[in-house]
Image 1 (cartoon, rainbow, N blue to C red):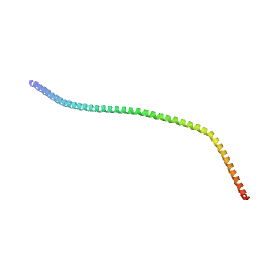
Image 2: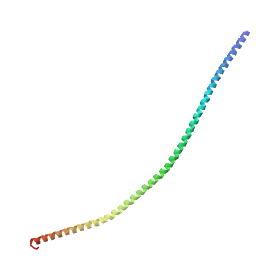
Image 3: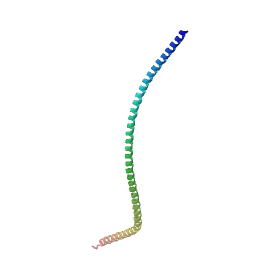
Image 4: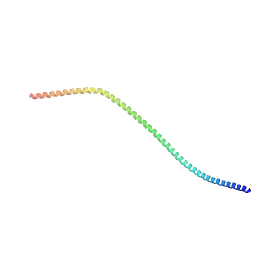
Length: 149
């Protein structure tokens, strides 16, 4: 029975040895995995820093562009205000011009009546002159026919 005790101690020692071998292999695999994980984390950290630098540069560029756009918008606002003022001045000038034209038309309306009367009298006088000349011509012709000249 003693041999049973030695056999069970040998089986227990073999099991313990087997357990130690598996634990050692697991630790070696775990160590390799940790080494790869450390390298991946280091590489990821480098990539994150590179991306962070690019994002920082991009933010600076975006801020510069936003500032430039803001300046241009302010300049454009002043230009739009100036154009609006020019439009107001043109509208005011048009109103004044329309009022002047209306006033001149009103004055010219009275003057038109006078001109019409004057032209009528001028036509009457021209007609009288024509008739006078016609009579003179007829008198001269009658005188020539009667043997006067």
